[in-house]
Length: 158
Picture 1 (spheres, rainbow, N blue to C red):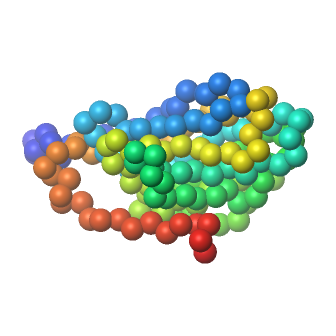
Picture 2: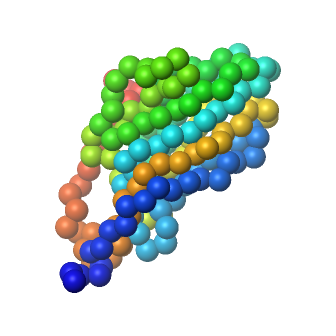
């Protein structure tokens, strides 16, 4: 039957829509660390501000250590879908879908770390919704030493 401490759970996860004008955040469930394989979200922008830039940030105790930026900005009064999956580093898929690159081995998110959106020029009328992805959760504990160290690149520094 195997060691129960090494059992993983792969599943679709959802993140509740934040209040209008706010970014969202996600942390792994208690007792687990996670690898995010894919992520999808929708942003509806108000008519007030010109352009928004969407980023994903991973941090621990308010110290940012990973950032990736969507390919392109979103103008006022538009609805766009942002999507990313592990290893994806390609062009825009269709006009309303904006890609966000994730690391080739997925976005590793240890327990206590936070994945969040960070939107430049966000307006009080902007709204994120339909935030979902595919995740594998690993049990936290002594077995975590078996996983390799992952080093991420900062997309903005390239």
